[in-house]
Amino acid sequence: DIQMTQAPSSLPASLGDRVTITCRASQDIGNYLRWFQQKPGKSPRLMIYGATNLAAGVPSRFSGSRSGSDYSLTISSLESEDMADYYCLQSKESPDTFGAGTKLELK
Amino acid sequence: QVQLKESGPGLVQPSQTLSLTCTVSGFSLTSYNVHWVRQPTGKGLEWMGVIWTGGSTDYNSALKSRLSISRDTSKSQVFLKMNSLQTEDIATYYCARDLGLWGQGVMVTVSS
Image (tube, rainbow over all chains, first blue to last red; front, side, top):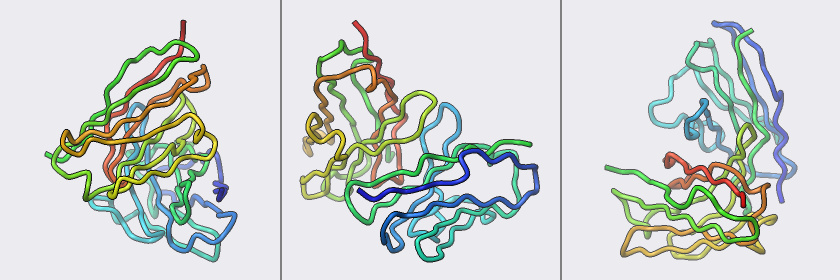
């Protein structure tokens, strides 16, 4: 199975900060990478698909990028509503696999 | 209205079988894939499996031996069955259309 190594596990940040979360794939996944946001008690929400494409309704301060086997989710200017858990997911090869998650919290 | 809704017993006895239903509306199961994902309380997401538009399935390697996903397209329902339940299976279970639209989830506890 493809392993997704996500870092950091916890990210304290201040409002207005630029923050980046990264996932590294254990083998080639092309652009078959999605990012999800999950708030407490809520279902996950798709934020990015195809590594770089913004899902419908997602604010433009969110972006996704790829460098080789490293995939990043960046929030350009952190807002209070962005405090949540974030997960990457590869779907290049079954079984799909999630990263372990990143808890984004206020510093 | 396009939505998915999970249902099933909230409590299952150890070693018994979990049976969940995902009822969808607003779209056809022959046009969209439906995934199952679970999340133990306070932990991360785990992909369980998928039923593709054509009816074939794929499963998480770790769960494959005790997991089954099926559907009834006429009723717009997808079914998850997992046997030999243990406390490690305590989680919220979600179904999701192509992982882009999610149900609200259903909490499952394993206890005698």
